[in-house]
Image 1 (tube, rainbow over the protein chains, first blue to last red):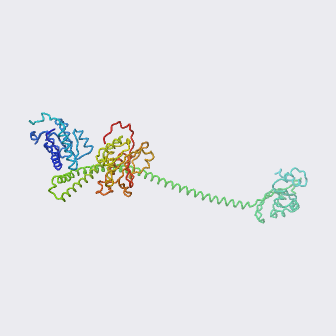
Image 2: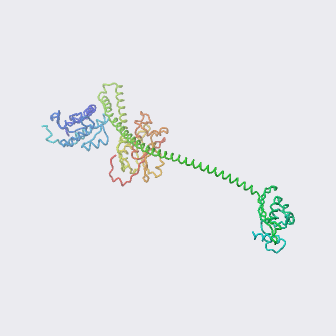
Image 3: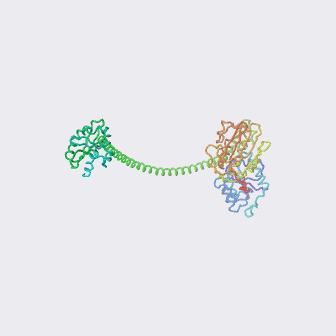
Length: 153
Length: 461
């Protein structure tokens, strides 16, 4: 059980709206932070730039990562996170429209913890968000944040 | 000549004095010989050959003057007289035209001498040559003609030779031209092949780009589609009480249209994935794959359906993803196309094809993949008791976007079987079906794989 925020990395505002709607329907209490592209996601995760204040922007308990985005793609985000080693233990689940084998394989190869495909209907989205809540936010033990990176009191 | 005189001098004597050893010889000689005596040239001796020549008897001739017994005899007299008077032998030629057939009479004359070497008569040897001149003339003529002919022939031969030479020269020119043309053709064929290869490569590249394009277009259409469907659904979920029945109906229609578009997009994505994905063929445990697949769909279980797998299904050479796609489409169709309210009943089984049957099996339009001899092929059947396919529709069921049934009655995109065919083609197999009023039987043919080869490690479908 984590109460840490969910970081949704998503450039499509509709998708954000539906995700919020599904969270509300499933009654997820965790705060949601949205990064609109890969660069912003990295800034948030690393606590740099406008996200330097960790109190206001705590390290996420789960990252839901779209793949195709401007500035930096989901793959680039994964690559940077896993290669740097600094956030190597962050739970990152890909949440994308692509179900291609190549994308799935590449995402796992870059260290994704899961791979979910965006459904078309709201009902299906609600089901998936419920599953996310059940597994990642309720039953799963997330990797503990490293002390030196956790600047929160 | 002395010898002759001596010998001949005895002829007359031989005729009178029997017992001469020459008499029989002269009698037997096949040449006509006659002896005349005295200034009147009275015939004193004739041999049988002479009688035969004149066609008269000896008795009719002896004692007659010579010129009376032979044709043209009078013309001989001057010569005969000279021989008789001078004793000098001579020859004489006489042409006789009085006879029906003109002839040539050749005379050889020499004197008959008495013991004192005085001429007492003349011995004549006669030869009748019929048509000699004529023959000679004819021969001459023939010779001339043949000479002329020979000339003509020679001229003709020369002409022919010249013509042949010309023809050969012409042919050489033609051959040279042909040779050049052949070379040019060879060069052009080479160039053409190169062009074809280049164009094929470019075309393949373009088709690849087009497929990638359609994939990404289809993929990108999903985001706005999700938007449409999602907001319509939110309105229906949360704001229904603010809307009247018509507005709610419209929202439902938006939702249904979006769902249908999603199916189409899914079809395009499946098709391009099936066409473009790398299909490395491996031995696949078909039995496990089909059973797992059927178990995945809640709607395919009793009491919604009766699916009977008559197994175990064999190992096949295939691609788990392509197989899963094909079989779920085929079973999905069998589930879908049943009379309203009827229970879908599906039977799945496999049969091994005899080596020759693979050659005569009905094949899809557009040709068959080549089949290596020595491989065994299996046909997997999917039999339903659904609505069947009418004869007029059977030619187009594998074509893209062909839908045989009204959309209101049977949900579908018209891509399912196209995807099946494409997927099976990628596995070097074939597809086909049989259908009647009691249902349809679809089949796919795949190469059989040995069971041992699998090694227990099977990529998931």
